[in-house]
Image 1 (spheres, rainbow, N blue to C red):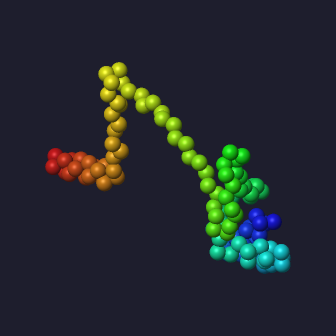
Image 2: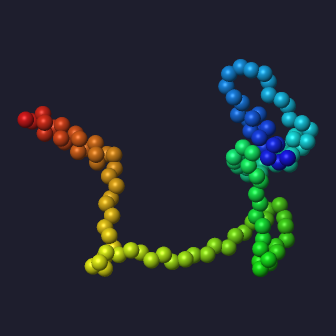
Image 3: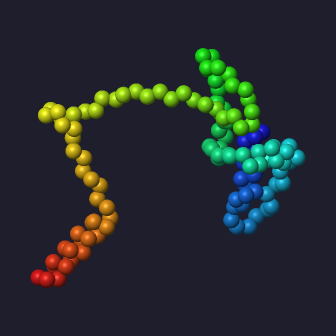
Length: 116
């Protein structure tokens, strides 16, 4: 229901180009849902996709629900070994060339051609 209301709102906000019949007006239920969702962040996803929500696991304490409360997730970090060369030094990385550097090289090459 929420997803359908968001889709109708999106179609109303961003109409397609060209002619054709007027898009259908939202139903009273959709209007109520859009009024409820007004001002809240929303994201468009895959058509026909499912709505997802954060769920708490059994070992986490439950927090009281409020309109401003958001889902909290626990982050864990793992260390990943860095590959090193046989001599013990990390491999050198090439610096990516900027477009202005490439353009400068081309201009200098053309300048050298004109001198010949």
